Image (cartoon, rainbow, N blue to C red; front, side, top):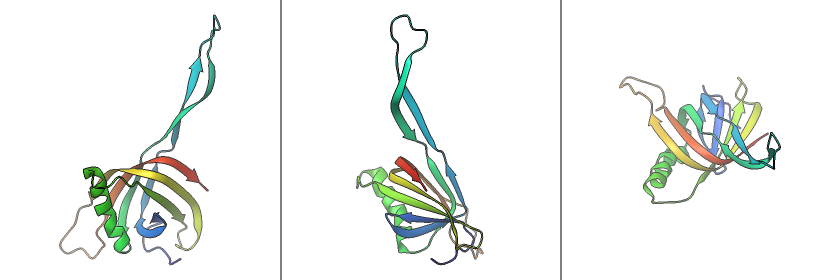
Length: 142
């Protein structure tokens, strides 16, 4: 795996390294248990209910190859209804040297919520940065 340039998050889209990001906001998982009130019991019985994975936002991202550039097109196609295929993302957190893996986050069957290009300057020598956000159906961390 090549070292990271100035980003510490390598993002794979459906198994292909596509973008690199400098910041990753992971919302976590919310769980809402079910409740059963029985007779005169003052408190209800609680059990496993429904859960929801919160939105994930990648900031300061830039494309590493043509797959990264196609990500914008995939987001547009999804929100316009041209495709119903949901993408899966793997976010690999790298150490400062860009070679060691610190943590891996897998986001399964994601729905795009935002794609925003960051400000550009005519004399800029940096890559074209953008921010993307998506809401996953499920989340695994290892």
